[in-house]
Amino acid sequence: MPVEGVGVTAVAVAAARALETDRPDPLIVDPWAAALVRESGVAVPFPERWPERPEDAAAVEHSMLLGAMYIGMRTRFIDDELLAGGLRQVAILGSGLDTRSWRLAWPAGTRVFELDSPEVVDFVERTMDAAAATPTADRTALGADVTAPWAAAIVRSGFRPDQPTHWVLEGLLPYLSAHDQSALLDDIIDLSAPGSRAVIERAPALTDTPETRERLETFALATGIPFDELLARTDPPDPAVVLGAAGWSVEETRVEDLERRYARPLRVDRDETATAEQRGGFVSVHFPIR
Image 1: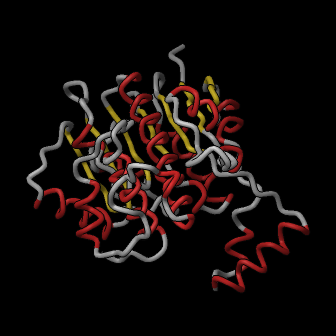
Image 2 (image 1 turned 30 degrees about the vertical axis):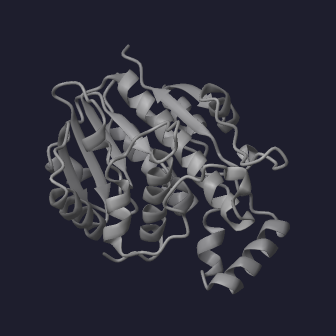
Image 3 (image 1 turned 120 degrees about the horizontal axis):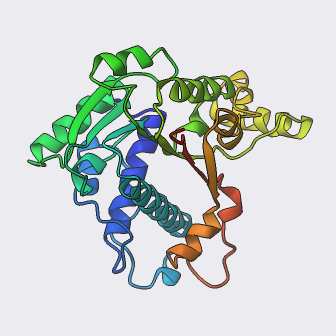
């Protein structure tokens, strides 16, 4: 499995789910996350077990524990949105090492479409087959790049544009240019029948200013990522604005709202500053039936 770029991030997200699962009070339980990490062969810095006293963990581990806590809340929130929506057609774009097709109690007749690179899709299928995991939905995995034409491909694979869809954009938008984010949202609008829903993790706002350009130039020199690629991620569209203008009803959820909902403050010890304001939050939208 090629694990450069987003692939490495997908493994880190699975490692965070595995760590959340190991907590004494997990928000989600993912029995396959650890196996996906192990089979990927990628060394990620997340610890494998949740410490009995997180506040006593080495300082270098605190950011990893915070990351796992955030992923746990994010995963649970999206799980709750999908199950509450009750739609029988679900599309997870940039699905990575997602296991919702196996671990959620889907309503009978639900079909789940997962889109990611062919290599990632193949790796997930091989690993889950080896684990003898049985999907709880009718799962269709499609090797497709969401920055390239993908709408026709998902329709050819059995997707029904005339049926309501619940779309999931989790951890995807920050990796796309502002142009590609706009194009993706437009595709979702075009493919959605009345009654459709979407849950979208916002990309944190990054505005093109002289100060931003200076920070991006420094980051580009340190990482080797082309400056033009980084600059293309500035001034992203706001999904709430784009979908609202298309007639969708919009509900916005901040990370601090989830901290309260799940009684899970984003801090490891009392002296740390919560990092919720650094996150983009979530947009839940519904295309009403007229």
